[in-house]
Length: 211
Image 1 (cartoon, rainbow, N blue to C red):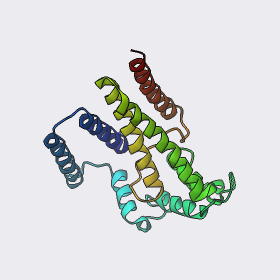
Image 2: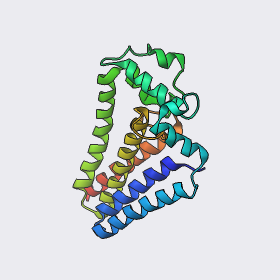
Image 3: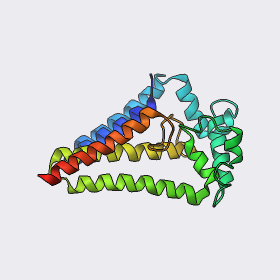
Image 4: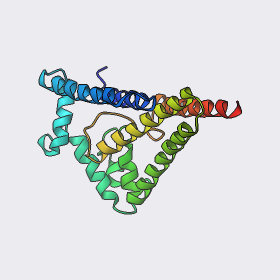
């Protein structure tokens, strides 16, 4: 499928691994420039799918199509705003219970935390995710072999970029891409792969420690 969100995460992951591997800065700069040029060309030549263009336009102006492409973004903002500082209470979110936010168990699960747990609860959730990413980066810093370091950097980059993208689209700060929130969104494949990645990091760290 044409999955722009996953492509962006994979691109960032590859870039992070290459940077950690010691790739010269000029090559990294050329990669960034080439990626920007490719993005401009894709938009200019009409290579993006219609729904992808609609999502971008809805991001820039949610009121442009409030019942279509801009509906998710607008309802997500309302739900998060309803939460206030401490939230409306677990399982008591009005927008959540009424089902106004589409895909609130997967792509827009952060709106549930924002509405029911408020700013404090949603911030706590982000801190827990940041703790996981931080621990993975700590493994990378302590790795004695290049393989373990690059694996950890790749996993950390992947998780961090996906969290930023998911939360960003829930808050209306980034276009909607359909990426789940790691360890939080409902879905067997996303949860399984996330835990496998953390397990792989732990395995490389344990192996290096025991040598």
